[in-house]
Length: 412
Image (cartoon, rainbow, N blue to C red; front, side, top):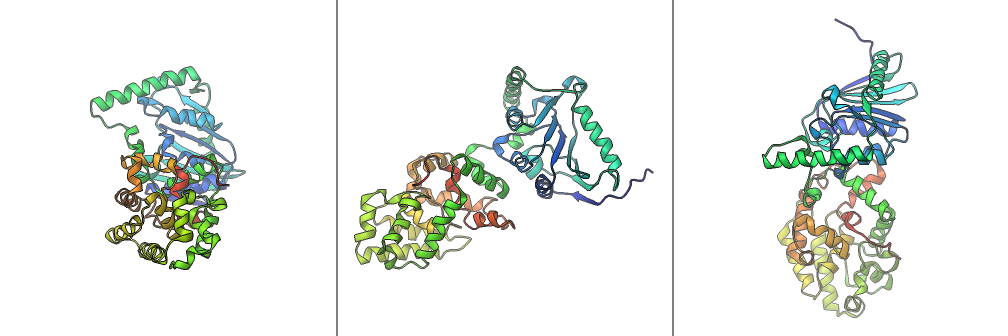
């Protein structure tokens, strides 16, 4: 039996979560990545594609397209990301490896196993992978050098080609035709495990996927996580729980509650003159009613007693305003449990989540249905991450669906 030199570290990764965790770590610790995989999934699932953005150095990839199972948008995404991408030639036979080789100087990390570069391969399938880490020319590095040469051969003109627009257009047509035939015949294909209906994304996303989407959308809208934290910190400091009628008497407190000026993140609900008037001139009885209902909702913990939340919200709705207003106040009080639906764009984009008109989110039943979906999701039920910046968002994760679905201008 052939004996291999000892490696610096070896791990048997028996679940998709452990594979994804180690892969993410390597994207931050190593300087380059060369990988070969049979198929790539839909980048609309966000992960594992977002992991590659953490790697500062060069990435080369050789991917297969047998049976038209690689998503054409994955090819576009990799090309746009300046990955050195080549497509394995179908005429040479089915391309079926799953190899990921990271390097940083003399150090290497090698993943070999069953996981394709797909969301399912990283997060939901039953997969088996091995991770070897060591130094080239020692610690088993000789065999790694042989594998690196094989990756280079697959990436050469002899075995693969660079996809151009004409080829990609033709492949996209073939991909769609294959998917149409499979669906017509009720045949389950690998792309089926990666696709998710837009309305189900919020319900099925893992924490890594949710967090990556928050960061991505903040960047696209030229917003920052700090902007949201500043508003929530101000609410915590100047509107301490439990609420009292005195919270409504100070101008700064009313600006925070209503989302005026720099507090506009999470929605400008004080745009309504009636609501501003209620905060500034409302009777003591009405202000006590607001504070009491907010306290009733804010005192709940997971798992939330939905009947109790319904009673609290019904008390608020009795004052003549909808969840477009009250959702913001709940999010300010308990951003770990409640979200805002104040912005028109948020309600518009969320309408696909529950398949209901935007107006339903302004009513208690629709708002509670949204919260129930959120509280059942994997990202909501996930463990608190160790990274401080990530943990800060996790602590307020329900309120942070606002940057995912918000489209518009920064508050001024």
